[in-house]
Picture 1 (cartoon, rainbow, N blue to C red):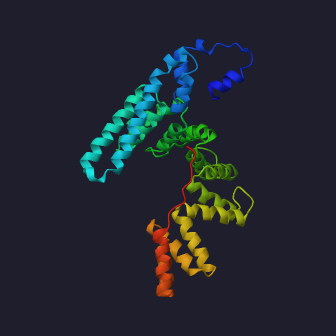
Picture 2 (picture 1 turned 180 degrees about the vertical axis):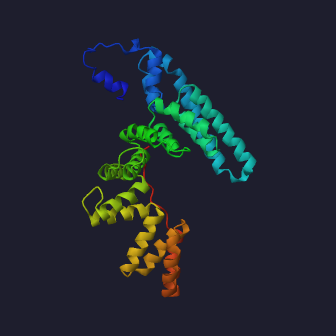
Picture 3 (picture 1 turned 120 degrees about the vertical axis):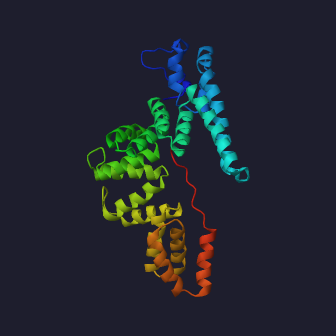
Length: 313
C-alpha cells in the first residue's frame, strides 16, 4: 500500500485532487494500517485529526510491542537471572505482545504467536498467526503456512494458500517454503521450474537454505539451465552464511582441489554444526596434515564468523 504522502501526490482515478481522506471510516483506517510498521502508523497519524484519532490504538500498540521486544531480548540475554527469572521476563514480554495484539497490531500478533509456539501452545499460536495473516502481515501469513505444514496431519494445500501471498509480498522464508512445496508436490502440483524461481527470489532476499537449494538447481539443471559458475557462487554464499551442508560440500571441493588447510576449516565448521558426513572426512584430512597446518586450520575455524545478511521478512 502506498504511503499517505504518495496518495496525496497521486490521487486515485476519479477521486479528484480534493479527495477528503478524513472521511474514511475509522475502522477502515485502523484495519488498513494494522500490518504497517510503527513509523508508517506515526506518519499516517499526522495526516489529519480523524486519522490521528482512528490510529490512536495502533500507536499505543506499537509502543507496547516495542517494550515487549526489549523485554524479550533482555530475558534472552540475562544469563545471570536464572531459569525462573528468564521465564518470568518472557511471560512479561508475552503479556505486552498480547496487549498490543488486542489493540490491533499484526506484528504483535506474530510475536505473541511465536512465543506461544515456542512454549508448545500451538493452538494459541495458530490463532495469533491467523489474525495477523488475515490483516495481510507477510510474516503472519508465512508462519500460518508453516503451522499448517507441521499440523498432524499436515494441511499442505492450506499452507500453500498462505505461502503465495506472503511470497508475493517479498517474504523470503515464504518464498523458500513455497519453492519446497512446488519441488515436492506438497499441496500443489509439482513444478520444478516454478520451485527454482521461488528459490532464487528467496536466495536473493537472504534466505540461506534457498541459497543452498538454488546452487543445487544450477548444478543439476533443475528448473534452470545447468550453470556451474552460478552453482558455485550460491554454494559459497550459503557456506559463508553457515549452512552446514554447503560448508561440507565446499570442504570436499577444496580437498579435491588440493587445498587441504582450507578444506579442514570448512569440514570442521560443518562438523560443529552437526553435519554427520563431515566428521569422517575431517579426521582423514587432519591425519594427513602437519601439526602446524592442522592447528592453523582449526584456529581459522575458531575465528570464523558467518556472514551477516539482511533477510526480507
